[in-house]
Structures are given as structure tokens and as C-alpha cells.
Image 1 (cartoon, one colour):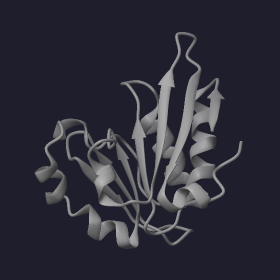
Image 2 (image 1 turned 180 degrees about the vertical axis):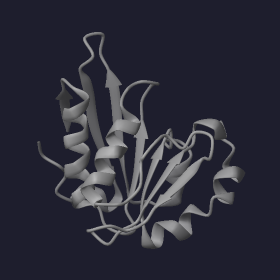
Image 3 (image 1 turned 60 degrees about the vertical axis):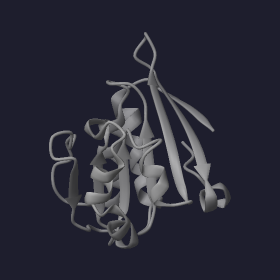
Image 4 (image 1 turned 90 degrees about the vertical axis):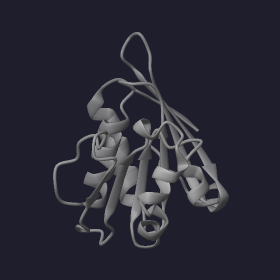
Length: 151
């Protein structure tokens, strides 16, 4: 499933729709180059979940927990970029425990955080030369049977 978004606001709106569909135990992995819109998408997901607090890239702290809001599901936002594939550091974050009671979104998580669960959604983002974002969804495990976001 593939989408094109002309503006960051379109990416946010898509994130809101995705966030509104998330529940505790959901794992979403964001893949794409710098500037593709991973953090913008996560801001939309947070809005869709109704979580509190400012959503910014957790590059230097690795993970931020946003308390449950209107949907009753906390958001754990992780940036695995600095881990450089070091799975021991990922284990130190104890994400498998967070995954039981939260929606977990991991930027740069493909190839590392996908081992947390057999059930996850990969969202691939790319930014074309004309600034249009190309978003592709790749469901794994039970995500394959779920109704994915439509825009």
C-alpha cells in the first residue's frame, strides 16, 4: 500500500489516522533517509492517540514516553539511529515491557527493533526531489489482517 503526500501537513494527517487506529502492543517501525518525515509522521501519530507533551526526535535520549491521552494508550517514541545496530543498547531500553502497555514507534528501527515482535508495521518514507513524500506500508504478522489506514 503506497501513498503520496504533497505537504508535511498531509503526512501529519496520515499519522493522525494511523495513531487513532493504534492500541497497546502495537509496534510501528519507521524507515527512510534523513528528512523523509519520520518525526513529522510520529507527531501525527501522537495527535491521533491524543497523547500529551511535545513530540520531538529522541535522537539524543533514544526514547521518550508520552503519557496516555484520550485513547488511553501511551506512546513510546524511540530513535534507533545512534544505536548503529547495537542490539544490547536496544535491550537496555526494555521496549518489550513497554510494548505490552503502549504503542511503540521506532524511527530507524527496521533491522533492529523488528525482533521485538512478530507483529509490526513498517512504514517506509521517502522524500522526492519535489518534496512530495512517498509512504509505503509493509505489514507483518497480525498486521497483515488489519484494516490499514486509508487516506
